[in-house]
Length: 118
Image (cartoon, rainbow, N blue to C red; front, side):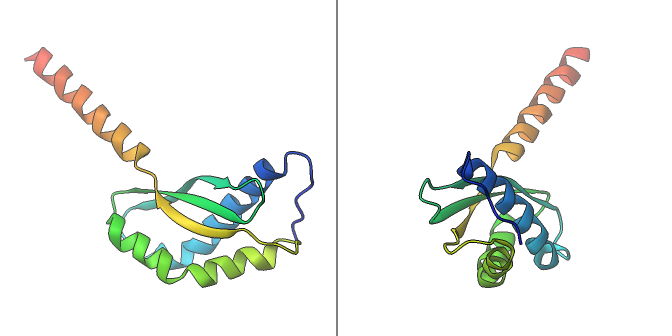
């Protein structure tokens, strides 16, 4: 069992949740196209809620988020069984579009460089 310590408890809880949820979602998304990662976790100060930000590259956002939300009880259960606490943060999934935006900007920059070379 993993037990977060009181110092900087939210940051430690975020790291634990990110690790456990990343392992737990693997079985649900392994047959889906693209790369799915947990980019960050934001746990509330009272440790009741945790926003889990999911980054999806090369896959269908809606399909993958639906799979995660359909299996949220199993994923939550994996988290609950890992933490040695009386109160477990309830997780919610959110789409992190940052990596996709960065990829789009990179493609635009490459296109500009190609046009300059012509």
